[in-house]
Length: 598
Ligand SMILES: Cc1cc2nc3c(=O)[nH]c(=O)nc-3n(C[C@H](O)[C@H](O)[C@H](O)COP(=O)(O)OP(=O)(O)OC[C@H]3O[C@@H](n4cnc5c(N)ncnc54)[C@H](O)[C@@H]3O)c2cc1C
Image 1: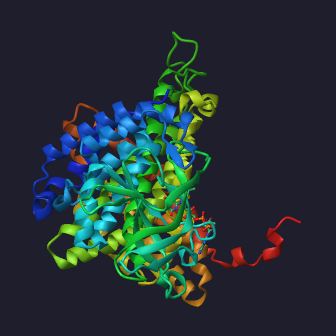
Image 2 (image 1 turned 45 degrees about the vertical axis):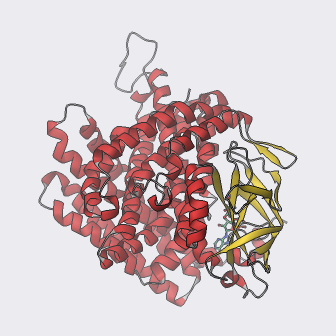
Image 3 (image 1 turned 180 degrees about the horizontal axis):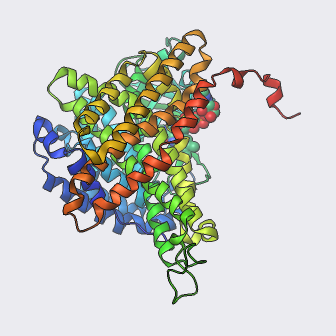
């Protein structure tokens, strides 16, 4: 059966030992009250909630799915009560602005709680995850009046946000949207159009649903420069802030999908709904990017959470499953066969999964830390550098974590053998639930285009230089430490490889724009492997410092898993370099007609 226990020891290791969160929090006014004790207490309570309330609903939620009945959507049994527990415990506003009732916890802490949420129940977690993004958007771009009215109930979980971008003919290319917004005399707008695949567009969890909708004004310029952003509540809000009439917005249907079956994916029709503009006319997409960037990191963590629960469950299975004998002779002579972990190939799969999961956890926290610095640090240059790092690393956090998370669920499923294919063990659900994270929130191909085109080519590698400086400062720090020499050599080599490949692509793309798209996915994977090597080097350093005094085996295991990454995973960069340098020509020469079946 599936098994989940929040990996608290590893989370505390990342937070307190690798990134020394306490020092950072103490140095910034907005986070000064967050002590390691408080952070530990939040993680421990989060673990109880996710293990005891959400995880037991994961398999049943998948089996039951959501139900659509005459415009209403019913979530699986138990979701409503679990949502109530989440709201009443104050978890919906954990990272929210304290001025409006949020708890103001730093991002590098909340990413760890998010991992627990996704690991225990990914379908359920999408409802609060969308709300977190929506509140962040409103906090950043809405007027004071809107913030005072909408943020407190959204932080309490009484109202819950959605993100309405996609239309039947407009997915990646949002410049094509047709939803219209007509100004009305009272200052509001009449919104008309059809949105599809809206996560949590309708359900029975909260008393009101707050849709954040992209639409075009009558005088809108063509393309993405003509998009505005509107807040459309399911129920209008009366002057005394009680709920008023049902707005002209309704759910046309829900999708039947491969996975995340407990998450309602809705067709939402706006039939002259009353909407309020957020931000300035025609600048809606830029504002929506605040929410999309938040969701991208969050969806990355969906990949990590599912990779973690898949790993734990597979190891629980592997402990009991005995098949064949160890190549060096019986390890378990009293039994008919040895446990499957005696086989090098099973260990290869388990170590791959673990090496990526632990690096993903560190990487998500590292990006969270940069987000906190970019928001709260007093020094302008430090803040700007952190913001540039966030811009650079967000597409990697979304695409690399979800790709490796999906691989993790598949490798974990493989460890089960045939049992992994049968529903009762839970492993196949994790594969199905992880797959969508590579697709939505901008496909992973689009993330790679964003990285290569906007975050690297457009600034000629300026953001990459900030990342490289951070890595080299670390290498300088550990250069005298003998045990770290393999890491110093490998990381310096890999960084140089990344820099020289970057230079080659920038040069090639200056002559042929197709080179960006041709290199993008391989480049993101190369960058991801190097970034994870940096994470592993930082973890290995702490583990080397502590291993002699440790009797628990935690640090010794860290060093061994880091060696697996160094020796058996990182060399994948060699192939990626060759693939990238092969360029666009080989992709673009086959005539378009030759791709289509006769
Ligand atoms: C379960 C689910 C939940 C969702 N939730 C939401 C939600 O809450 N809100 C919302 O607004 N949307 C939501 N979506 C929509 C989702 O974000 C889109 O499906 C996704 O962004 C891709 O758009 P598309 O499906 O139209 O694919 P398309 O844009 O048609 O792309 C098809 C293929 O072409 C590639 N492609 C397209 N353009 C380019 C390009 N310029 N360069 C290179 N490759 C390109 C893509 O990578 C992809 O492989 C959801 C979708 C699903 C399935």
